[in-house]
Length: 318
Length: 282
Image (cartoon, rainbow over all chains, first blue to last red; front, side, top):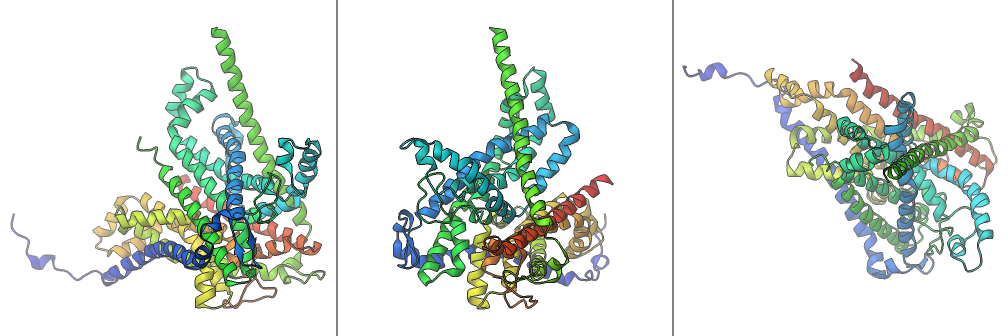
């Protein structure tokens, strides 16, 4: 082999090569913009919420007095309201979403499988404000007339049922908000759970059936263990949605800042409080208290979403 | 004993099957109920005036034109920003950053932003744009808020479809002596085009229904306005205000708006679906 004459390999740089680093840095800048915006959100919430947090300290989390006139702000009501409504929504929604997902994978007659699957996925995209409006005008009145009033008249004085159902029977309460949230996250969770169940290898499922297992046993002992961690991640994603949801809740929760005394009492969530009051905030302290609430919401959802992310897709390595 | 166990298993399996059927019926019933209300309450109010007149004072006739046009402008502006930033960021993750720690950090942040509460995005953009840069509510602030919600979706889909492109495509660019960026632009983006477009449509469907971030940014406007530096009406925000009002004609308009909004979002989602199916067929 003779050495290659360097003159032969020398050639003009390709057209546009000078722009290579420019493009590279533009891409890098865009990726950095994502990092910067999350950092920006945290910093902006910290700075904006600091006056309220500094003034009220720990009382911000333990007091239920939310009074824009005297400028005393305690956020226990909205914080508890957020957690209770989101967890209740998950409790209502999870069994149904699981049932729908299993139905679509195991039991659905095959001509219906695609249409129903597509419908579920499309419904996951419907704007939350539509769910909220339906809740306000259709579900809440129906609920007040046909569930809340009968239950309240049925309840014995002093019984547990009376405690749970106490409240103004107008349908705007924590319970209704949770139901609307549950309906809203239902298609989303059903779609994700269905995707997960479909990742279970057919051989694995069929070997289960080949052993004479019933569908229940195949789901519980083969499919679910296979996607266990991801399934928990999917549920956490649903919880994250329910925690941060604004519009579907604002319409039907009743918007009172006190700690809800019963399931059928009106309440508020962090997101609904911000949506309702931010533009009408009277003083700097009111605004700051609302931003501090936003910071709390951010921290809660961040933990939930980070956990969801760590769990989702972590089954594949096993 | 064995027959007892078998009976128990059969009963359990039957109960489980019934449970799944019932949940499916419940879910479909709930969602059908929502659509039914949307159609019955909204369809009657749908007429030409909705598209040609602006939002009325209570009691007088009017439509939703300013809100519809406002929503289109806000979403279009937001999408322009989001597509540029999102596609570039997704390209960086797939082609340059790959598995570096920095890219992993960006991916993590992107996933958080993907599901972060939109009301917080509104607070952030309010703080930056409304309180500082511009000094008052404006359409452009609303567009930035929407863009911030759309970017993570586009980044994610862009990265995913670029990663699906075969290495041979990248090598073909190198073989021709094309600069890296030309190869990305002319070869990779082209072959990933329908996937990126799908991501864009999904992002569009998502932001067109967003209400919370617009309340503190584009605020709303009773009148028709095209000025990006002024407050602008948008469909979700008008639905929110009108639905909670005490006037029957406003509530009726809110239903019409909700019907239009849901229709538009469904249409965008369906088109996105058709686009993703196309390449598989060929």
